[in-house]
Image (cartoon, rainbow, N blue to C red; front, side, top):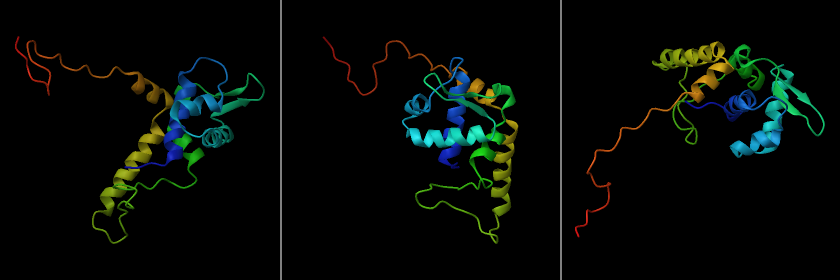
Length: 158
């Protein structure tokens, strides 16, 4: 499943604003963390400001911050702010064009159902959900067995 760059980075922008210290944060600082052009992040922030999801302040100590607590921001609002049309999922790699089921495709109903589930999940999820899942500890790796040589190396005898 492929989503647009705007939507993907829009979630990242909101995440950054939700997890940074209080105050205003520059588009440059946010863009730098993701190696994305600052102008691209500014356009996203402008759309988020128009939608009432972030506030902006001009000046040397200005920048952007969330307009509401993360619990009050639904990802469906982000989708509406950044995507003028409802998202259409592309199945497969985008470079090759992906697979878009036609009206006469026998499995179209299945793919449309997945698409609706995706859109509904975005509408029901909040920015707080994103922050919570991103902060969850990653599963720990099992410890290596004692006395085994690392893979790819031969044991040497002395």
